[in-house]
Image (cartoon, rainbow, N blue to C red):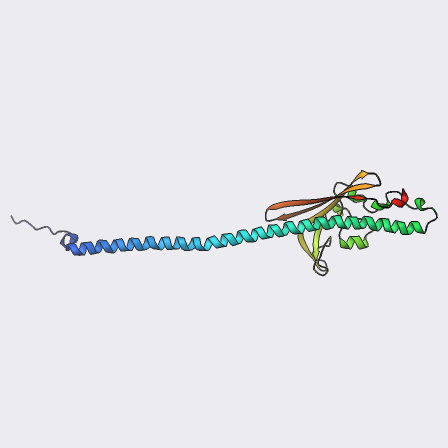
Length: 218
């Protein structure tokens, strides 16, 4: 009986040198892929790192900018109310100088004339335009919660209507609230600026006390 020779697998017929060469080739391919992945990871880290830092820097700058604007708007509100108070006193002094009976032409609280809505919980609004033209400070309920727009012509924040004239919308609201400390002599003024920014809803408040320096009536 003739025994049929079985052929060895192709790998068995390969010389040892060729097997080693094949193994080295496979290993080389594996290391190349790993090196590529590492290189990509390093590249991504090198790109994402600076971009993340830049985004955080821009975010911090915007937050600082909003805080600075809000602080200035709050302090401006205090100064505008102080100016409004002083204008009241000066106007009444002019009227009193022309009157025979000074006390008969005005009440003792003339120095806060036009500020009635400021004594309410919702507060009132004031800006450079209101200071010049308004005899009465408007309530915040009549000013869309005392929202502030930016007038690109005058470069001032006012209670203008966005889209009308040179007025553009801003994220800021400013409300003035006044309370009596000493009747007819002293009031506390609180100016609250609120806005919606990168960190969500924020608010800032400035407080000052104003006196009735019209000593001629005492």
